[in-house]
Amino acid sequence: VLYFYPKDNTPGCTTQACEFRDDIFAFRKADVVILGVSVDDLASKKAFAKEHSLPFAVLADPTKETTRRYGVLTSMLGLMEFSRRDTFIIDPQGRIARHWEKVDPKGHSAKVLAEIGKLQAPRA
Image (cartoon, rainbow, N blue to C red; front, top):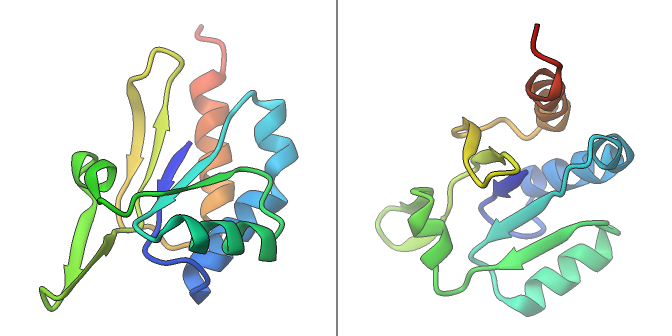
């Protein structure tokens, strides 16, 4: 699971990260790795991860290159660029299996887990 979020330590981003944190055992049981990305710098990432005891990596993209390549770079009034709140499930072959755009952070972790369950279900 690769999820992009706008800014460390903002209410929605904290809610989203903490829900992924709280569901970490279910993700691990499903053999899923979670990675969070925003355009904040490394120092911000370290503080955010430590403050909220995040058991997964939150990655700094200060050049905005990764965010741009995934098509989720956006701006506010053309002044400040940041990541849109999008989530990707990437399959073991490196293909995007599911993409959510502009997600609501509340309850999103549960939706991602449900989708992973569907994707991992044996085919009849």
